[in-house]
Amino acid sequence: MAAIPLLEETSGGPAGAMVQGLAGLARDADPAHIEILANNRPERKLAIYPAAAGFDLVEELDYLCARTVEPNVFFNPRFLAPAMPRLEDREVKLAVIRDGDEYRNRLRLLVPFSVERPAIPLGVPVMRTWSSPFGPLGTPLVDRDDPVGVIEDFFSMLSRPHLKMPRVFVLPDIRLDGPVASLLTAFAETRGLTMVTTGKMDRPMLESEADGEDYLKASLRSHHYREFRRLKRRLADLG
Image (cartoon, rainbow, N blue to C red; front, side, top):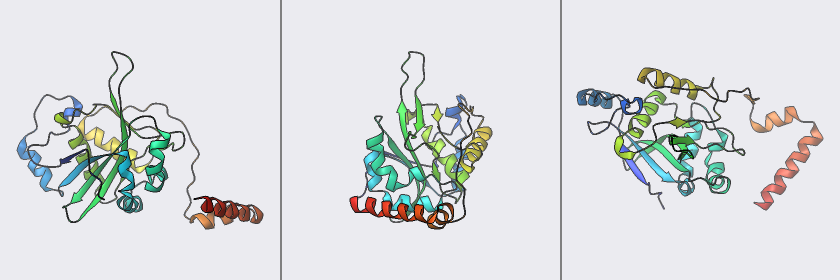
């Protein structure tokens, strides 16, 4: 059964509010400029799904994972779909961007997120990408085909006033020197949006051209590798 979105928005056309809404600018966008921008790239749709829809989107998300500009193993649907309802007390939703038509389309972006309301009276609500102690990486998945346009369309649609989304977007636990951070920084600079880095820290990471099996064989002693394989088989038997 196909997943049913909670809401959908379509890019392009004079009905779409431009991203100046995020920047707090009072000047309205010229509809002619909107049409020009819309005609330079394919029509895209923003769809927001409940977390449970992750099981219905596995095939599409698998394809996106293979094409993303920066991988995030914790947003792989095999981990994401079963993990979110078990690891998170907050209501997490899935925001995706698609292009194409109703007969043939493809996912271009995935952002699992929650909307968090302030505990203090003067605080502001924020939209926060999903990250947890068991999946400490909040990097969205962005398709490598026109990633700049995908990011622009995502925030342009997200900023439309009738959606009433928070005006602050938080991305915890992302690589500051990674491709996605570079895309977001460039987007914020061209749109005059404020971007603040908090909690900066160094963290070890694994970067290897070898596949998993070859890396383990080269990194572990033979008896440790055999034990690892045995434990993996036992885990598979348990499901």
